[in-house]
Every structure is written in C-alpha cells, then in structure tokens.
Length: 271
Image (cartoon, rainbow, N blue to C red):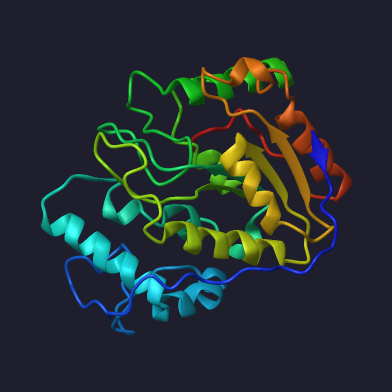
C-alpha cells in the first residue's frame, strides 16, 4: 500500500525523563553522553557526520537524553550484556548522513541473541550461519519481487546502507536475551527526532513501514513530497498476511526512477 502523506503541522513534545547530567568516560564513548569533550571525536554528537551532528547535537542537552545516558551507564556498570556493541549503537546514522538518505526501513529493537545485532535494522553479520527468519523473508520477497537471485549468506546489509537506505531501529539497544528491555528509556524520543528531521527534508524520501509499530511512525511523516509504503512485518508470524507479495522493492525503485534518483540494487546486500 502506497500513501502520500497530507501536509500537516507536526505536533508533539519531548518527554522530560530525567535531570542529572552524566559524566562517565567508559559509557560516553560510542554510546550517547550528555556531557562531552568537544575535542573528542569519538563521542556523541562529534562522532556523527556533519548533517546529523547539526540536527541532533541539541538532543544531548535534553533531560530525556541525560536520563537515557544514566540508564545505559547503570546497565553497563551492572555487567549486563548489551547489544549491539557500543561502537555500533549509532551505526545507522554514522554511516549514512542526512542528505544521503533515499529510503528508510524502520525496525523495532535490536536482535537480543548473541552475535546478531550490528546496529542496522534487520541486519546480522555475514558470518552468522543461521539467519533470523524475518531477514530470510525479506530476502525471499526480494527474489520473488525482482526475479533475481540473492546471496542469502551476505546479511550485514552494508550494501544497502552504502546506496542510501537508512536501516533504523526505533530503540537502539537491548539487554541480552530480554526483548524490548530498553523500551521507553528515551530511545524512542531520539529516533522520533531522526524521523521528524527526515520529514522536514525537501528532497523526497521513501519510508518502508513494516508492521504496526513502524506504521505508527507515519504520524511523523506529514510532508507531501515523501512516500510511504506499508505492509505487515516480515516475521514468520505475519509475513504471509501481506509482506510476502508486497513488492516494496520494485515499487521503491519505480518511485526512485520517477524522482530521478538511482535505483537500489537490493541484491547487493554487502560491500
């Protein structure tokens, strides 16, 4: 299903979830930190490319972000295993700057099993032998839709990111073996800011929203130049209710052609 959003004013408020500024060198590296040394390029927001840095730097000063940082600090100090690795938490926006985004695929929270989450929604390392069922269904739909073979062993999706596909989870960390364990800690506010910022861009973007949680984010995508494609989630529980057969990959390329952008080679899943 293809939707062109109506023009509307964006309504919403940033939740205020905490007040204490956190200073912790161990936690403040690749994961967010609300108090940073501007000369340290490894810390947020200095570890972002220029476009995202300009748009997101202010988030570090907000109470919700400071609360999120405090929560993550406590998680690491308690010796809990957190996915993905710290250097990959912001990978989706570190590898693809704001003005380079052509397509957005929204996920939920990262995979919570060992050796799976790598900071890009739905992606897992190429070396992982057993691929997640949702990703396998995505690959099956690509093959059916485009009538092209895809190497299903190449699963890190770096090839898509390189071509302008933002693979964004709405929650960016998770506790090992505890799905949804980092929900409602502040990540949703941060990623809503990312989506809202993309909505404000003049150049058209195609949003692929799979499943009801992702589709709720269409409320943030109001500007009429953008495109929204909706389908059920590729999970085995719902894929047969409309994800398989949705043809989102060919439809995306048809839209890109109409707006004079290069198509995505969906079979090129890894660099």
